[in-house]
Image 1: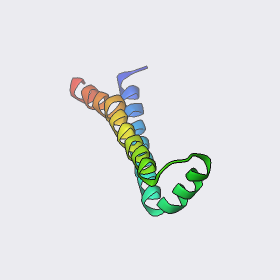
Image 2: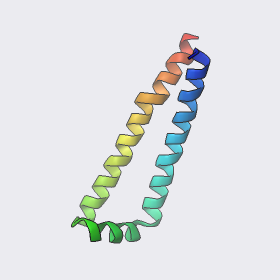
Image 3: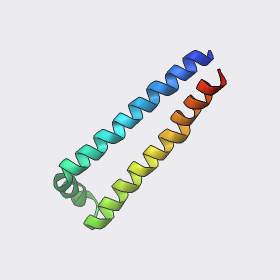
Image 4: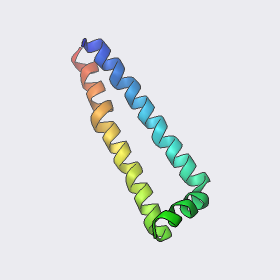
Length: 80
């Protein structure tokens, strides 16, 4: 795999993952009550726990995107 191809894959993967977490956040904000009602039928969670799980998941996803895609992308941009 060439450096150019790897850089392109990392760049597009970063964009995809940032769009994904943005959609997740928008759905969470817009459909919070419906999502909580659906999940509380399956799992016995308080609303605070439900919110904490989602915010922690979004934070983990964003951090993973930065560490696995964005930083290596910029490192390859600087190296070449």
